[in-house]
Amino acid sequence: MNTNSESNLPVRHILRFDTVIVNEGQGYHQDDGVFTVPRTGKYIFSWTIAAETGGFVSVEIVVDGRVVGSSFANGPYGWDFSTGVVIVQASAGNHVFIRMHQTGSGVIHSDAKGRSSFSGCLLF
Image (tube, one colour):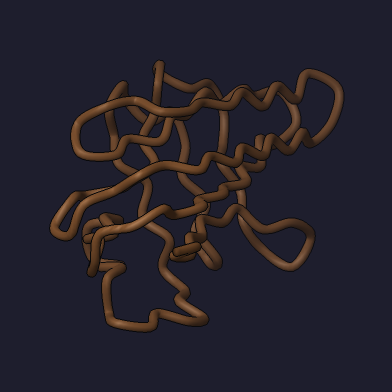
């Protein structure tokens, strides 16, 4: 979500992060926002979501169909950022993504003032 701002997204909408800095193994697919695990192991995933003033955003991370973490950003008086981190065992071919947990109000933002992001790394 480097250059996009999205608003009032429905429940279970998968967020797409359009600027990819590193994609070793080409596991992240920016067209649908899904990371496909390239090999079995322990992974760390993190995400940051920015809610603009007056809005709120509730998201969750899903690994192979299971919700394994969530975060909530609420910006009634200014921007708010929410970050989550999980460590999970994942198998080759599992899908990992960030999606809306509930319908948001306002805008998820990402630009030079603050970035919404999603990252992951194989630990071992």
